[in-house]
Length: 305
Length: 309
Image (cartoon, rainbow over all chains, first blue to last red; front, side, top):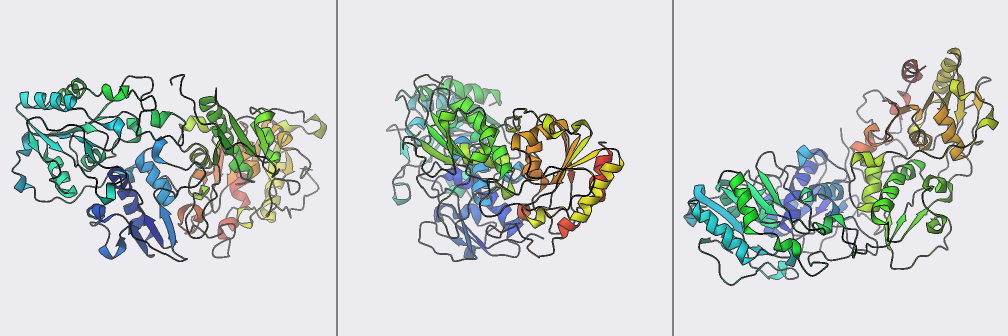
């Protein structure tokens, strides 16, 4: 028998990857420690769909609202509140490892870290031929993860040359939740293809991905959504080492695209606790310049597209 | 790494009075120095009682934890082994549910290292001839304990000592109950040494004890500081585990065999590792019966010793 405290798990992150990676950890916690003791999961409503399949609605709360719990309740935060000390962060470890440490104070077996499949929803209203769709993520939050028009256009051109359909996904959003780090698009118009920008819900995006031929893009939230499916993923990594960000899943091809520069994956490898690696330390973003269409196309060819 | 990147100067605070915590942190600190501080400055804070563990740290960079006058410039980032911060019911990272080595690397570096980086570092050998003991025939028994639920009952200790003597070996009783790093909870040793064997309690320095262990046949005891000290040597360790899962506490080392003595499979064994009671003081049995301790019977240690002696 396992004796546990009632715990409030506070998902105090707005990053989709953080939340998706933490979901299986929360599920493990509920199934292991909360058979007989109460719990609450605080998470932004935007992400509730990720949790509704295994958490009753009365145990889900809005993380953005004030809350108070009194002992014997315990509170565990995904991101430890800031202090003057250097804190444990996900900079130097996998998102799932980080979630396991922060929420459970332990490293659970990797088998329990597999990203959870999201509920399937109807996507027929998009009138897509998903068997021929290759999804290209075109939006970004950090400057060092900004995919260029040339890269997108090059991939799209190749996709079309193979008789397939480029489908652009992502969102441009500077609303309240993302106001400090909005989603952006770095070019004015998209190359020829299907434009699903700002048109899909989280679950719709996952359902579309699940039935598509491949998902392509730079490390970002939608890559982690793709990680909840078995779709082949080709993902570019600039400032972060792919070993810290590859979605954990039972099956599905994953091909990381990595730059060949000395400072590649700086955030993961360097020992700078307070630098904001969303911006290039040297301001040249050479890693980003190497995220060329050629590399993505080679990867797509290698999986038989 | 480009030459032009200047890493953060860091102050690593190994702010624990538990010898096991510190010994497990030593290789992590060494890794940090070798990896991140070739050109960039650092400081290390640790108990004066454990300074010798950090023989690779120059005196100029070592700050004594007990000396509350130490200061370092704010250009240093501070990383603590045991984090201190908001009190109340905000759960903290603790080593109850993970290996001490992982705990050290998470607390001090914010990362998980390759397992081979966690091997305990051998300590400098010192002269132990003054003890006039033939350590080639010695079996070291740890007879002190800090927590009652990490002890071996006296009657069981005596049976183990008797067995060692009968096999023609010398039981050596060790443990420190005075002048240690601890503040609030000093170890005790109610063990009454029999007429045979050698009683070295409170008579050895840490380095002397490590050298003795290194030269002995085996070290027997319950999960405790001396067991971790034995982990710096290749000597066979026979260690009992009660409230903490042995998987989280067996010392990491390149060479040397560790025989784990488990409690009988009672439902509550390894409670502090398996349960999610973040504020319960597992230094005392949750049920008050200490059944895990009671089932660390001498016969289990003797069976293990038979494979060694």
